[in-house]
Image (tube, rainbow, N blue to C red; front, top):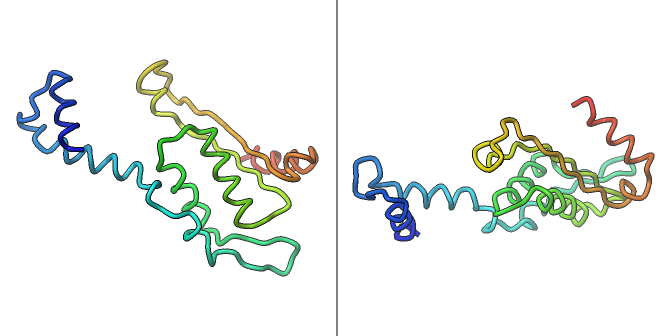
Length: 149
């Protein structure tokens, strides 16, 4: 990967041997591996042993697992719509609930820094499964909870 990044610098008109760029191929490789580390993580291992029975008609997932699930899927080459659906499907598969609702509000740096260059480019996506999709009252109740976030 370092050789490809070095060649990229040359193609951009830079000298990869100049001061300040000598270690850039290593830094870029490290950064890309960090940003895409979700490919190397097994979502089943993260979720296993995290489901707890409660004295109600619901099951819960250990709260620390939810951010881990989000991180695995978000650290892949991704679009927000797919990310939202993958999180919802993972929760559905792990918990077997009557329904799952996932809403993501995200800042898109690609929209802020290039292209349309719109600052504060927040977008909202949702995925509704089970009763959240089929029962408008359940969906509206959920949406009212998150409305005042």
